[in-house]
Image (cartoon, rainbow, N blue to C red; front, top):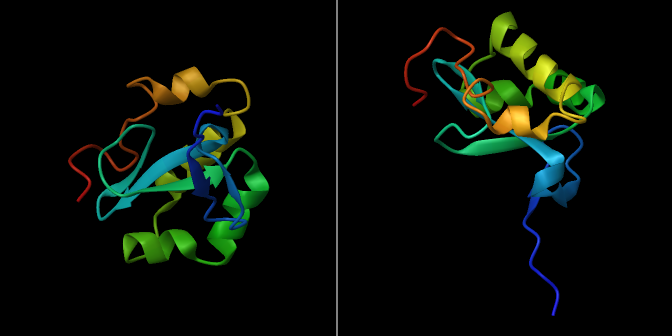
Length: 106
């Protein structure tokens, strides 16, 4: 019997991939949180081209209700760029810090 593999859709390229191959983030009024933050999460592939596609198509602004600032985008860029071999870092509390200076997301 095969084990169920959760599948999610990348907001950049819109391709469905196994959840473990994507970077999860939450966009709220107070910024972007990466990792295991609470709230409705979105997913990006672990490459910068998908992040750039999401930014070009304004998908992050649609998720947040307004365009995110440069600091949250920089956090996403660093997580996506460093996500190749550092999945354990993304799950630690260090990676789930708020990009906008703290507070709850919602």
